[in-house]
Structure formats: C-alpha cells, structure tokens
Image (cartoon, rainbow, N blue to C red; front, side, top):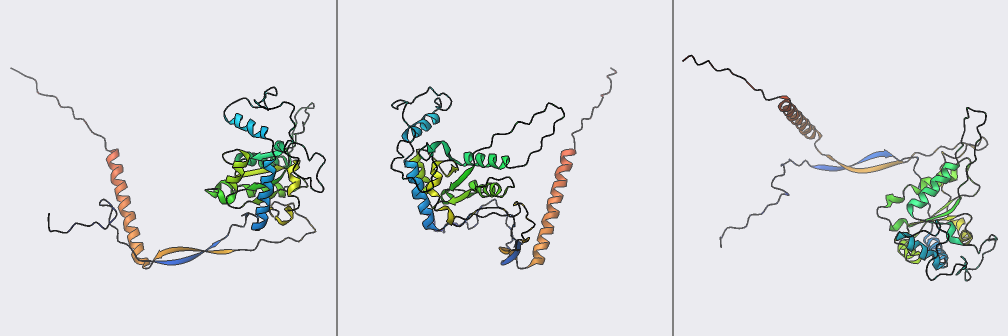
Length: 320
C-alpha cells in the first residue's frame, strides 16, 4: 500500500464553476401585507374535538347500504342513482334510509324531517365541496337577460342547495395549499348581496381527523365534508356554531349608508433576507457577469447565422 494520504475533495462537484463567495449579512425588508387575505377562523381545540366527535357519531349512523353503494360505484359498477332498479346484493329493497339513526337523539328545534336520510345532503371531497360552493356563489350573482324577440321567456334557474357547515382537515393536508381557496369561496357566499339568510360556517378539524373520518365513512380520502342546510345532521351542530366566527369579505359586503365606512388598517411585515456586505464588489461582479453573458450570446448568434458556402470551380479543357 502507498504511504501517501488519500486525496480529499471538499467542494461539491469537480465540474462546478469556482465562484468567489461574498460575505453576506442578514437584513430585514419591509413589505405590506395583502389586505384581501381571508384567514381561517380561530376555533378552540376543545370545540374542534366536539365537532369531530359529533361528526363521527353522525357518520357512524349513516346506513351501511350507502357505504356499499359508494364502494360499487368506485369499482365501475352501475350507480343506484342512475338505475333505480339496481339493488345491491344482500340488501332489502324496502329498507328505510334512516336505519341506524334510532340511537341519535333529536335535538331541540330540529326540523320535522329529522329522521330522513342524511346521506343525501352530505358532500365529501375537496372537488365536490368546491363545485357546490361555486354553484351557490354563481347563483347569488345578479343576472340580466337581454331578449331581442318578443317571445323570449326567461326560464328561472333552479337554486342550488345551500351549504350550512364545511369541515376541513387542514392539519392533515400536505400541501395545505389544496384547500386555501375554500375560505375565499365561503366568504364570497356569505358576503354576496343576494346571499341566503343562512351563513356558511367553516370549521377546521384537529390533526388526525382525516384518517378517522375516512375509516368511518369507508373512503380512501375525506379531507373536506360539506353538510347541506336541509340535512338533518345540521341540527346536531347547532349549539356549537356560536363559537365559530363567520368568514366574510368586507370589500364584498353590500355597502350601507347608515354604517360608517371603516378602512382596513395597514400591516407592515418584516421579511428576513441576506445582502452582501461589500455592495461595490457585488455590483462589479454582477456587471462583469452580464457583459460576459452578452458576449457569449452574441458569439453564438453569429455562428448560427453563418451559413456554409459552396464554391464551384471549372477546370481547364483538355486540348490534347
């Protein structure tokens, strides 16, 4: 064996360009906060646990026939909603949808159809809840129809079902940007001029809720759940909704002449970043790098424009 010590490479790559590292210092830059940002409502952790417990109790009382039909639909079979004559094996065609709701007590002030099927007013999934909120927000807009003929009849649109509660498992989503649009949709529905008298409550659930809800419902993912206002399940959470702040957009709410206009206060945040200690040397290096890149690009463009030329020569005639 050789007595020479092993060679050690301390840099990252042998082909990497060696750059003179400038000493940098931490600095803070002032930036303005976005005034049109809608934040999630702040719900205490004990209230979130109560919401989760009641939601789990409500999902457990959903008939097993509903879970089986969803499993068949995922496998590509015929949906019971499309074909009414379709019946799952092992189920009774005359079975009522309120099987399993007998252990669920009816709270005070519950509607008369409390024992009806809750699964018809339950929306599960990020995309499904987003579409429902978009339909409700689109219907609340003021529409003007222009008719050129005298026989033009404006057909009234069927109003969509109004959402009452939206549960979101914010802590279980990665990345959380998947549900960043939901507070804006809920605020738009609550702040619309033609909005229904009932508001939508946005309830974030604690960490680990998605796995529990998915296992109970029988789905692989259930990060967002929406409950319709006409659903009998909405009355179960009625006493807890008072502790949830209503999400709304102040710039979308209809202006009232009696109420005084209140401006949004300006919030200035500090952004932590770095800057070179010697700015003069940094500017010189930057100008040299720009000049070198410009020269390289010009040289490359000239080589591309240059076309190969072909020279034709005629030989002398043989006189012999």
